[in-house]
Length: 230
Ligand SMILES: NC(=O)c1ccc[n+]([C@@H]2O[C@H](COP(=O)([O-])OP(=O)(O)OC[C@H]3O[C@@H](n4cnc5c(N)ncnc54)[C@H](O)[C@@H]3O)[C@@H](O)[C@H]2O)c1
Image (cartoon, rainbow, N blue to C red; front, top):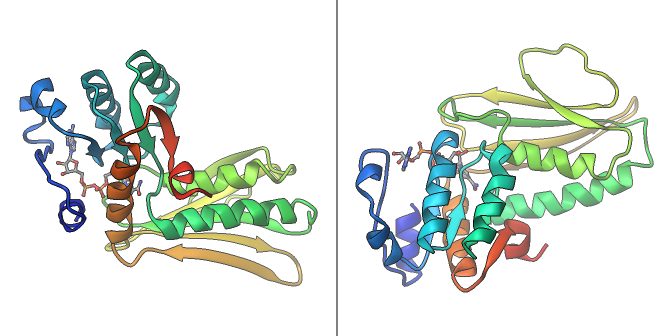
């Protein structure tokens, strides 16, 4: 899907690397690219990121579930004067949702009678849980609602109560779901919900190509919020 969009936008795809040919990739080959787009798996992302940074190739990172290594990746980026844009979600719609979520949390900080919760549903092949997108939504809430101190994930089928200062991220895995995210505020008298549902993966793929166009002439680390200007 990324290749199709890149070609439509007038780019050339000079290398396609997956788990079967990753070991044959050389620095010389990689250096011929203006940018690399990395959507693989949590266990391989950091190795691929470092390889691109050390080869001097700007990189767009869509893989989620590796962020505990973000500080080390930032150091590698600085050391190599490299360029990277990463995002838990590259779709325009979700980035609008992220901006709305932060604003909503600022308002809801004044209304402790509302309980807040994040929910996400994805296909059963997804390796990480909760989704990176759900974590970004949770962080947007934690940064703005003082009664919540940390998030905790829970399988949707478990409903054990959490401490009052913990924000729940409920996750569900169902066949064929590209991605659904919802934020819910519930009081004794009403409920406010806002959500995003991806119908397919085209929004992520377009965002990844836009990310490559964005990062190609920049230095340093950026996120989708920088890219979309929210
Ligand atoms: N940021 C976003 O917008 C966004 C959107 C969708 C998916 N994702 C994330 O992207 C990642 C990939 O998801 P997907 O649905 O495209 O998965 P996928 O299984 O459809 O594709 C993963 C690809 O990575 C390749 N791969 C695996 N290990 C590799 C390695 N060591 N080196 C090179 N290639 C390797 C596989 O061969 C496969 O082609 C996941 O972490 C997912 O959560 C992010």
